Length: 210
Image (tube, rainbow, N blue to C red; front, top):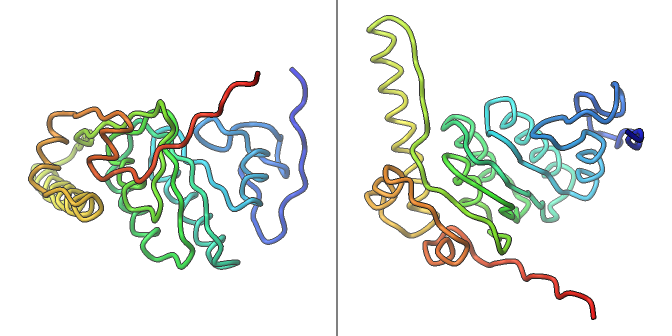
């Protein structure tokens, strides 16, 4: 395979794991090469791909806050996450609320589970023509003593309630309807997502050449 480009680090921005300061070319997260994430960051663009877990949420939150600290210009976030955890999603949703820079989120491919919340709370919400959004219950697995299980179950229920309320606020739907659609695993195409209040606009298809 040809060697990936080795770009110099962007001033004021720590290198991604496996990026220019490391072996180079390896995906930093979600399959996006580190060198490409570096270049996108320089254009105030962030890719959020793969399963949204705590590590990914921490990275993206740090990038958002760093971009916000350097300028109030718009930040572009490309989202393609088929699933994620409630904790990670709420972390990014809270981060977006704190930014002074407007955030334009664009859904690419499949978006599902708690990761839907990241798109829902962005200032501008765009979907690619063939994107799909699935409202589904977050998966959870806990172990421990009966007391620990009860505590973690109560915490999960509280996070799920907060998530439903945030989605309801962002979409204009009732929390009850949101909860029902999450339990049913409702799948939305882009026009259905727009009618639901999750998407503001659908990206235009490029016209083919003559």
